[in-house]
Length: 171
Image 1 (cartoon, rainbow, N blue to C red):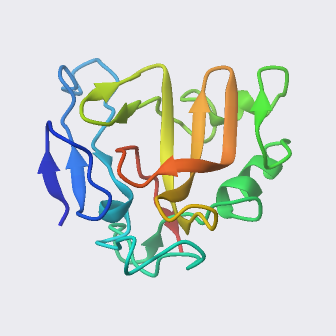
Image 2: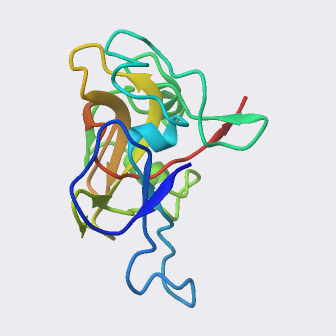
């Protein structure tokens, strides 16, 4: 857990890790790391074991003493954005908190792109899974979305089958 996948159809309920990215060697280039579907990030939770309205997944692939951040308007990502001077919801390039989420800011955000049947948008945008199922859609989970012009720390549109990054926080 998780099972490494490099191509094929995205899967909602079976843990999948996607990578390594072509050319992602760590030798002078940005190391994007692996991308995970929500089932992998939450240590095997599925739409059956953790449906919409189930709240935060109890487990994750984070090491002992660490956990996935919670999502949504009152979650860990939103709280961090407020500490960065944002509102905890979508912010565009005119707001000063955007710079703090970037790779050269205190968050050290990596624009690792996504995996959905193949890799895309590496260096353009990035997403990070939360532990929180999205209450409005059994296929969804909260995540934080980052690019150079915006941040959405409480995004509710993350489809559980797509591959995005994981950032663990201390418990």
